[in-house]
Length: 380
Image 1 (cartoon, one colour):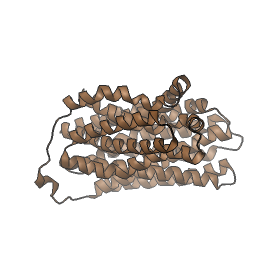
Image 2: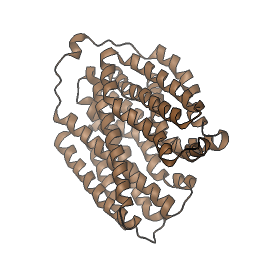
Image 3: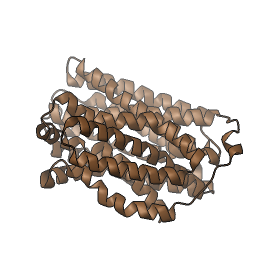
Image 4: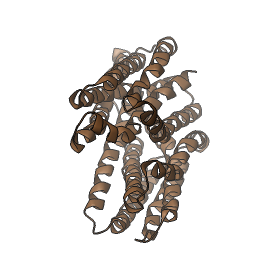
């Protein structure tokens, strides 16, 4: 039950990354804003989340992760309410940033509680796999749930849907998340950061850089080049998104039995193959041309995510689980955002979309291979 509760926490955080995207056109119309204001609805949340993950993770180590989980749920819920009733774009963007603060408190703390509760390394790896799968499931559910809510109830529903979930989860968290006090001695012990921790976080960043960047490129290809509707494009991305949700627990079990290096290696190799498959896309290609890319990316990241998160967490002492989680999530979120920006810039400055995809095929494939080399040099 505690693990399920913690999975709901990461589900909420990741859901609000994607559920808002399909609501942006109606938000722009409803609040009479510009495209730049519309973009800040997404960016305000992501900037606050990525910028505060490290601070909030370390804060949890100092004051106890139970407090930061409860604070994160409370802040996230209050901010969701303000988002849902915001009368103008300025208040909506401010509330989205506050949502990001709640998410930053919640995300590293849920993983740190798992580290505290699962002392055995194998059991912890399996739990991290389930946790990672819950986060991936939110990425899958976001566009679909957002579309249903916007069509049925309007854009405010994508924020207000969080309230009944938090109303249920918050009292459960109060009762179930255990207290753990960190001693003053623990917080002042000199921390040794080894190659395994550095390597796992570099690979985490490269994973999101290429993974999220490729996902953006595929979305633009389907909607702009093939002129698909948003709903159809979302459905045609399922070969990427479904393996992310399904393979998280499986990757956790493989990690528990064989260690992180094996699933990380297979995941990175499949990701590289998927990226190089972009070279097969031609100006007259149809949807079938990108299916191998989607499958390679989806299975690769599905195998990789839980393993690389476990490698990062296991590389530091258990009393620094919040810091470890904060660093890892910061690496993934911040570098992932840079990947989205970089891939977008390449596509916008290329002569044609397919020419840009070919450039990104080489860049992404090489980065996956670099990450594979880092894995073998640093991760056991």
